[in-house]
Image (cartoon, rainbow, N blue to C red; front, side):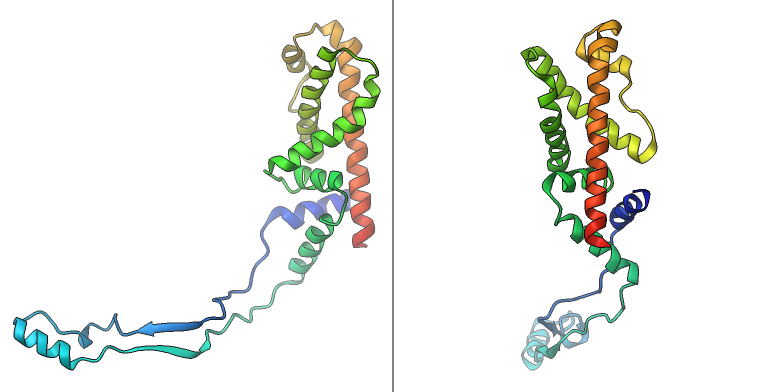
Amino acid sequence: MAYIRRTVVYAHAAPSPRRVSEGDEAARYCDDVYRDRLPPAGPARWAAEMKRASTRLVASHTRAKPKSTLPLPPWAFEDAKVVAAIRKLPADYQHWLRYAYADSREWADEQGVTVALWARFEPTLGNARAKTVKGCKGLAHLAAQCHKSRKNSGKVIHEPARLQELLQITRANWDKHWGPRWHAMHGILNQLDREALEALWRITE
């Protein structure tokens, strides 16, 4: 799991080098930059004569400008293979891998992880009150952010004390009801992480 996790990180850590291409169209040029072809400042009559006697040159290459033949390093193809493989996974796995390890800034990925978490967590609530459900939805979004940080740096970015303030609950209420829900969400995200990495491993091995 650690190996495939690092593979995803490295595949998105830096852009792959690209071949230099200037397009396939023919390159156009003219002699506008050659000042000695144009009449210099001077008497108006002499300048007019020089202008009539000068022929402006406009031409085109018969071939397109050549492209760079610089070869791409082997790891560039491996990275591209990993990125392409992620796109073949189920949507929940794609969202998690891009959000957690590719450091995606796309709201669709962060939202996708939260929705995937909620789809797995909601059935465990049973006949919970509407206020509890609303609080759990907000908690699910924070759990996704926190679990991403824990996987990448081991840091907890949302401490229980702060969550208690956001939920406006007591420490006793947190310990009895909300704490177990918070840990259950992390358990679900941990399972989603394992499933996504294993699925990626199977299609890239």
